Length: 89
Image 1 (spheres, rainbow, N blue to C red):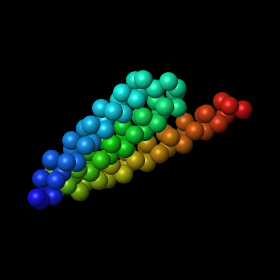
Image 2: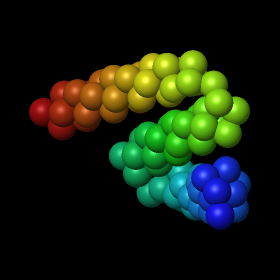
Image 3: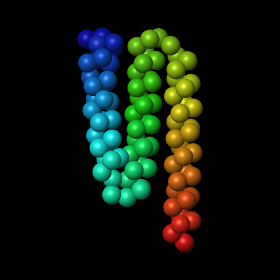
Image 4: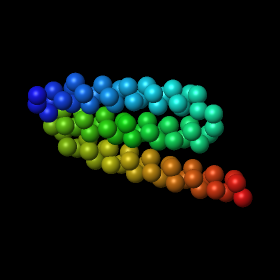
């Protein structure tokens, strides 16, 4: 089994199932915190998809896109936690 086979037959299906489960949590989430965490996980899974696609297509430039997306997701999470902290005071 090569790396390409492993990515195609294991990694991509696992990422796909995880996105489906996260979307269910995003829709059913009882609170806004659950929804924000689910959105952060969707972005993280998207980074996994971008990394996998980068390996499959031999295009390392996509890893730069994944790093920028990770930075944006991190800043969004920090901004949301700041908002929650200010709202609770």
